[in-house]
Image 1 (cartoon, rainbow, N blue to C red):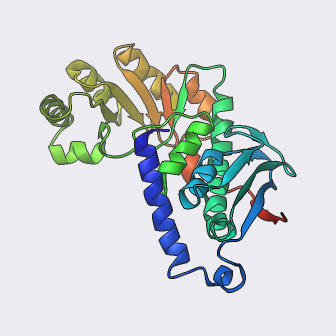
Image 2: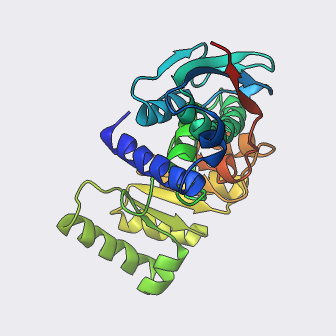
Image 3: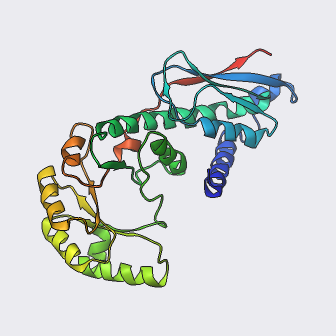
Length: 285
């Protein structure tokens, strides 16, 4: 994982611990010696795609560098009810303080990875790939997008800083489609030449106008029906990357993929995913 990822994870863990532990884990302080060590095993209680194994190990190592972590499965593996994912040994206070954070992360991530894998499986025979969106839980995007990756999906931009995406509101505020693209192109040249530019189009007329102007890397086709999408792709050809967005789900994703569009973006990968059932239980030494 990158230094950026690790830095962001450290912030997430620190904030989560402040939220949960406050001025002390008094339940543990009351009955467990501070130097006690113990083991805990992660039990799988629901079928799906496992995600968050690397995160669990990192969380434990952050709180107790002397902890040990033995993985029985890996991120992205199929998991079955009744299996064990890992066993860890660490300071008991650390295990008990990290238990809920590890479970919250892994249950949420496994749910997202499982749903993402369902979309990815539907696209096996097509060139189209599925993207996530910024429809994420505030302060938890790092792990939600990592779960999409583990499930086989592709991460769209992480935030507002790593891509120029001109959506309907940008276009309306800028005055026109052409004005927004021209200004974005000049901004890129003078500020961050490595940024890609994507522009949202709402109808075939806007598609034609973008193709005529150029200066973008990808065209988003928002709320197009599969038939409209096919017509738009015939106008675009192979001059720009293409992305379909809006109203795409498991029931209709193949209709969009048959058009040959490069990407489909699906907010539901994250905001419709259901956490899966896992538990972390003490093991006597």
